[in-house]
Length: 335
Ligand SMILES: [Fe+2]
Image (tube, rainbow, N blue to C red; front, side, top):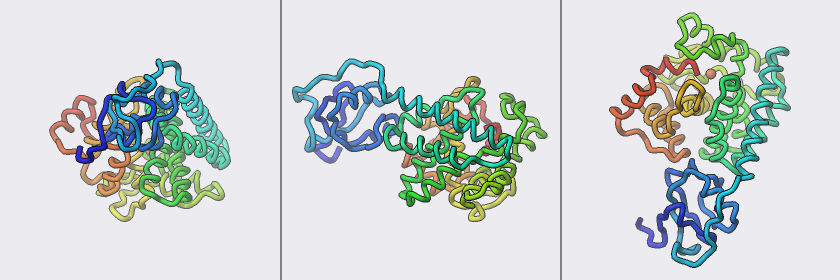
């Protein structure tokens, strides 16, 4: 480490009064919204101790070092902040279920409910970003679509802020990402919940969900056009091999390119009853190896945002892919 005031320490050596300089690639696992701050509250120590972070970097010029005599780490006990984040996400998922259910009967969107969910996700992203991302990885069979919508909304919100987009744009992207799969309410449950590979006919039905969703959003007054675009275009690929229209390159708008990345990243890293999730690092390796799918510049920015390295080992990627039973990008169409 070139800066002599910076010191990498183990999580177990953390004390109150230390200044956290960063978590490096482990930021995603940290329970904190800020990456640089002084540890002053026991609750922060508890949150850090309960997280899966193993090491962090402290700045000795701004806080105490590991040899100073300070209060030891408190004993772990149930984290109320983690519990409240979980409760908030459960509530948000329930609200998405209600949005989807109402849309199925009225064929349009309850904008007020959408705003409420975005508010919940936005609040959690400011206070517990890593918790949101970790908690939304877990998917249950009955709630997959709703949990996925919340997860993609959180990822897009985080990514949009990383890109330093205007707050109003972040808001629109959050709404669009929450609703990107709304068209799935028109897909038969048997196809949506099928865990085996879809037949050609089932795949064709599944691939109508962007158009179905777009038609529904078009009937909802007051939604920005870009929300409909995100829904209609989130399965398009830059090389023209996506659906529904096989658009290429610049024909696919930036908002759709952003949600496409977050959509697949959540699908790959999700833990489902019938499937292990990839680690974020393995997902990055895989996504980086797919030429022609994503906007490469945006994908690199996304990896930066998530503290992930740009993939460098195609052989390792293939091994991971084989172990997961994912041989082609088409295998992901069930997501
Ligand atoms: Fe989709």
